[in-house]
Length: 121
Image (cartoon, rainbow, N blue to C red):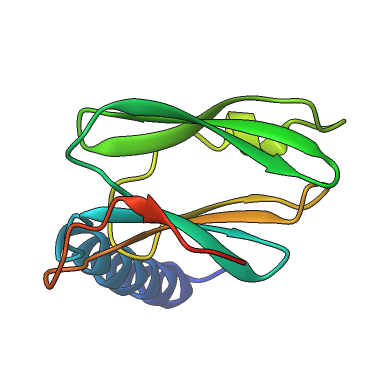
């Protein structure tokens, strides 16, 4: 590699990092966690109220913990437990997915209402 190639690579890397960092910094905190099982929304919970929710699906369970403005899956009985290792989410659009149980947990900004309930099926 020549010096010009290294400079070009460094510039491209710097631009990519600044774009990625900018998107993360400007991403707003969410206010609601939306839970979907089998592609259907089953519940919405405020990120402003600490709680533990046991999410049941045909495949098993996921323990959702909402605490201090963030949410995480603390326990699950799925084989790989990837959802447990995904960590905390709090920003608008962040998601935790449990494929074996078909559970998707997404943070959204819901300025209109701070809904805390379960929709009927």
